[in-house]
Amino acid sequence: MTKSECPVSDGYMYYRHKLPVRIIHWLNVILLPILLMSGLNIFNAHSAFYWGKSSYTGNPPLLEMRSKEGNKGEIVGVTRIFGHEFNTTGLLGASKNMEGELDERGFPSWLTLPGVQWLAMARRWHLSIAWVLVTYGICFVSYSIFSRHLQRDLLPTKEDWRSIGKTLIDHLLLRHPTGEAAKNYNLLQKLAYLAVIFMLFPLIILNGLGMSPGMDALLPGWIDLFGGRQSVRTIHFIVAWSLVAFLAVHLFQVIVTGFWNNLRSMITGKYRISSEAEHE
Amino acid sequence: MNKNSEITRRSLLARVLAGACALTLGGCQKLSESTWFSHILGTGEKVTYKMQRLLIPRKAMAQEFTKADRSPLFRSNGTAMPNNPAYSAMADKGFADFRLQVGGLVERPMSFSLNDIRALPSRTQTTRHDCVEGWSAIGEWKGARLGALLEAVRPKPNVHYVVFHCADPMEEDGGSPYYESIDLEDAFHPQTILAYELNNEPLPVANGAPLRLRLERQLGYKMAKYVMSIELVEDFPKIAGGKGGYWEDQGYEWYAGI
Image (cartoon, rainbow over all chains, first blue to last red; front, side):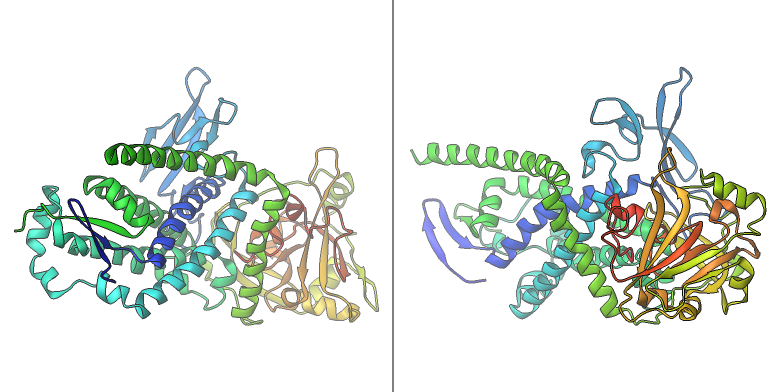
């Protein structure tokens, strides 16, 4: 990172995030929710997940959301996971539509794009935005390698590994690096980012492409490495929610380590390093 | 002073963020309903089509499976019994007087009985059917190679697409017959067949009797059931909704390789 440091009253401003990183970050903020929500709309067209090469193998689905009629003739939303049935009325299986009436749908309208059940439009959103994501994803990974962002900021150093125990305890106690130590990502942060960039994203893209009958013909049978066409669809969904889980932890960390400082540094690049930080 | 301006800046930023979220979500909904934006989103389909045609070799084969992989019951989706008196009459006679009409931009328009079609070079393949909704089923299909049938009618040089006209009306009043179209690259692919058998039995009515298209590198809705006639065309804007298929006219992609 460039050392452009300008002093302010209680410390100094440190240029933490370069422009390409900031651009990618905000593109993710806008586009990932679109991909998730249009994906959930697509899922709602057949709200069940299976394992294997096809949906009809004689085995029941792993997960299924549907509606059934209750004792008084009312609509009940039901979610079945590994044979266990749960009443999830209002959220999964059956929820209120745009007119406020209970309707059969996998995920609720407020979680899907479009809000109405509209497979053709959801596919348009999902498959177009996916191209945008893949394009800037490739640009970002190339940038990270050539600018040495990957080697300098993301790959754990020997010292990182040596202090693994301390980092873990600090995280559990919500003790966060301050002062000079806050300039660099810590070990767990680096591992989380690396996992997202080099595991979750490649996995979700690969498993997304695995659902394409065209791409399957490229090398017939390659999706069997993941268990088959229906497994690929299931994995795509699991990885999507893994990204949501990452986002939840990410937002939590952003808030507890200084929300406004973090937000500013992701907008302008400048991060305030406070001088009254205790040095350990 | 400094503190105050910081606070207003923060509350302003918070409001901007909240507003942006609401605008994005509401905006996406509005955009979905506008034709211009749906056109922009449609470019994704063109990119997919070009990229897949570039990456996937012409004769790349869809995965084939074993008998053990076959689904116990091959799911019937969409029409299970066409609401069409002419079709019902034909089905009652076991399609004995069925004739497949093949015409359009061809040197030699022809019509084929089921026996004529059975006499054409055939292919048997156990393949996976992927529905746009997300489910898959595996079945063993036997049918005439579409390429062989097209060669028999001698397409004119300006032919670009093959259109399938079907017996199943998509509207309750008997209107909007199902139709589909594919390009020549797909039409002459070795796995592209007009299937007359499913799992060693004559094709059931629920699955498209007497003939259904199998187009193994695309999604299920491309594989027209109840095919009655085939038309070779240069382009398809004048056919029905002009998008090249019943579901395409409802907003689905013409190229369904993904």
